[in-house]
Length: 366
Ligand SMILES: *Cc1c(COP(=O)(O)O)cnc(C)c1O
Image (spheres, rainbow, N blue to C red):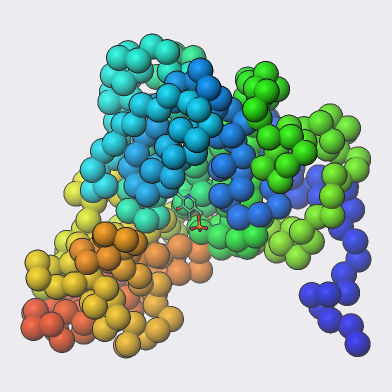
């Protein structure tokens, strides 16, 4: 018997290329767009291994856990790494990046995470792009958690490698990801004898076998289900409008922040300044003496479908993440999440005001 997931017509090269063009439009980019057949960690690692080598010096901006991972990969490639770490409750500034570049003129690679779903902050990429451009370094950007939630403009910002995944604000599949690659980045990859080739991590393979060949023959069998899911996700975004999708995420973040402040009970936004808070997800600090993972467990007991999770690793005790992205960038989801957190706070002996929280959500969302 036939099955809708199994008995599909082959995905043609032309179809694959048309999905690539739709992603390029989403990014407003003229750069080459490569769809990579795996979760976003694949192009994130592939770009670093292609662009970094012994003798290079990389500025690695750390505003959350992904920045730490990128630093490890860069060191593993033999690059000298200058870490610029800022506290997770804030964002990095262009002036800090400029200062680091001035102190280390040999820097030829800059890695930055745009928004961090894991810590709830977002960085001013347009301004940072200007100073990176002026310095001349290659600019690597992890935009997995920002695409769909806030503007991501690799061409306007001078980003040389912009990596996105569909599984956050785009509300799409996790099994395929995308990177836009500038001409400068291709040149750097080609000049790097250590850049992966004939490897799953290789971007040069895609250039030589797919792009330079006129996108006529796929180098290997495409991840067909994920590609169709990506196409469906792009169609849905085009129907809603990218601006409307971003506005929905901005509203969810602003409403969650205002609602948490009105809820009280000792709950506070984790990111101090609203301007530094990411539209994709809002992080909250649990009240002193209240374990965040316990609070989340109590809130999920009210409704297990809520997009609540405690922070990862050492943050599990103090951070609550409200992952209001994709379909969860929705007023009812934000309201229910705050109500459940109110119930959880009550159970720990705090006094929360869920009605004030709901009023704040209504005001901010309108
Ligand atoms: C979510 C995310 C990724 C992708 O990682 P997964 O944990 O597999 O979803 C990469 N970078 C950032 C900044 C992210 O938020």
